[in-house]
Length: 432
Image (cartoon, rainbow, N blue to C red; front, side, top):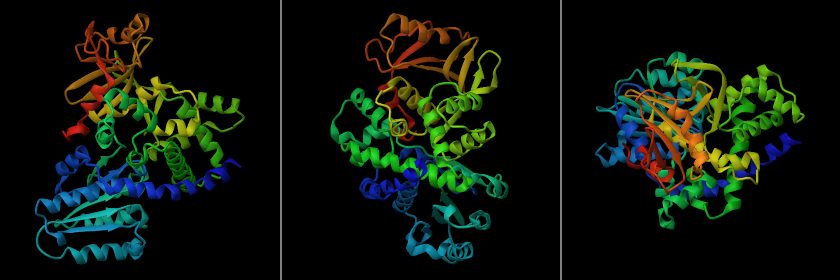
């Protein structure tokens, strides 16, 4: 019954197509990702753009192609193929796709080739590997999930691709996209916590039912199409219950064993090996981010319990259908996603028996982040500061809250920061 409901709800996807088109009529710049494409331009590698469904990958390639043309690249030196376009269905054949690209890139100069939804072409990895041998071709491709970088593709293209992982709108991008509403950053952050950051949502942000339908459709698409079909899962209801369990537990340490116990208590029996398989699939589809623990003192990754965060907080209420607005967990999820944009590696910190929400690592060193909805209560402030003050090194330490009162104060080397202002300083805001 649950599975029939999931499949039936794909109507929501069709209903939401109109809203996707509406959102794309006014293209919203993504300077951070355009800067990454610029950095990798003509580097001799295939540029592979990955990310959740509907996060803006196709639009990014459209905008980057327009940027190249505005800079003087000739029209016929930009080759664009969208494999989800039915008029180009014949190009889903690998031989036809390869022949088409080669035919259009015979003249002098560099040709910029953009292939959207490349996974719709069987054996696409062989096509990419062959095209990559042609020095006149600068190749850019998109795909819906991380399955593109598994198996044969990773083997064939080892050392021959640059991976660009996209996410949905950061708060800085969301706030810029909705600027005409004239909402102050503090209030707009609350709206962002409720709506999430999928680009299409900004077009119908004033229609709560449309937002709900859109997220319901996306959940169905990921679970039924991206995971059940690929893994030949017979019972989508079990996978859905696991998804609900993780979405309810964002910000909490979990393990396959305690997940199995939780599901069993809810009347859903699932083996631990199957849980491992499903967790990996949910991660590969970009629905969840898996975050390991890191021993701050021992400087080593701990292999037992982990945390999972949603790729977009808009899924939280769609999946859990919870009337309780757990803004503390939502804010923590948002901060996690932002920290991953600013640092190359993010883990959950352990210092003795205490926990630091995030340990961020870059080429310059470490930074430590703690997240709380509010620390105006003195006891709450001390509780949130305690893990950070246990760390005796000199790397930066931050406590991020929604509080405006007392932001920018420093306690024992820990800087309090207002979440809205910190998020607006995102690299996605200026493309740096």
